Amino acid sequence: MSKKPTPSFESQAMRELAEVIRGRRTINLYLQTPVPSELVREAVEAATWAPNHHVTEPWHFYLLGRETIDQCLDLCRDIVTAKKGPEAGAFKRQSWSEKPGWLVVTCRRSEDELLQREDYAACAAAVQNLMLYLWKAGIGSKWTTGDITHDPHFFDIIGIDARNEFVVSLLWYGYPKITPEQKRKGLGEALSELP
Ligand SMILES: Cc1cc2nc3c(=O)[nH]c(=O)nc-3n(C[C@H](O)[C@H](O)[C@H](O)COP(=O)(O)O)c2cc1C
Figure 1 (cartoon, rainbow, N blue to C red):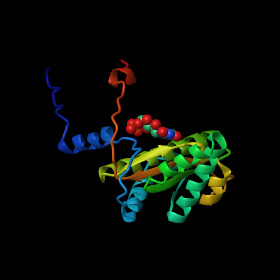
Figure 2 (cartoon, rainbow, N blue to C red):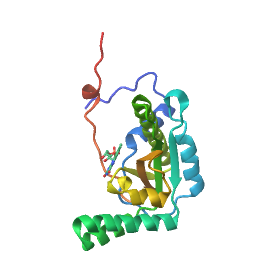
Figure 3 (cartoon, helix red, strand yellow):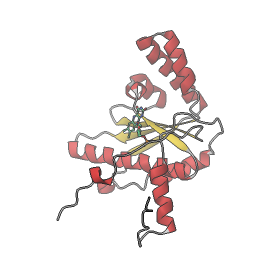
């Protein structure tokens, strides 16, 4: 099999960057090793350098402590119990209790539809910045938008005023126990080059 030639513009730094971007995976299972909170604070600061139209800085990051996480776990159990019964609720609570770090990312609400769309896009870019920064430090994460992130009780627990903000991501993070495989369709599917 012929080896893909190295493009002349490619440098070690670019290969490393591409490795971080391509290698980052959504992590479901984590080691219980704590992540230094200073590192997470740095990741949040780096996240805020995302592009955002009119530099509105529409994001807010909530770093949850033990007490708040426990309240979220109880809420998760209650949501699942209401849908699928107490056994499923207890199982889900247990599996979520193994997510070491919890961050909630919100976006400012806007009455202006275009501004709202662009602000959401900026928040998504910020979450990606955050995930990549963590990944470079050996820390995996998972972006979720599950039922809990729409539940009014969740807003109460975090202290979010739903009139002003909505949840973009509940982001779990920690050192990966298992890193799953993923694939993408490839450049041919994603790119059309026009004359
Ligand atoms: C906006 C957004 C919401 C997501 N919500 C969920 C979710 O609720 N549950 C989930 O299992 N994964 C969720 N994911 C993660 C995707 O499933 C994941 O990115 C996808 O499987 C590709 O895997 P990769 O991140 O390893 O490339 C979400 C991702 C994004 C960008």
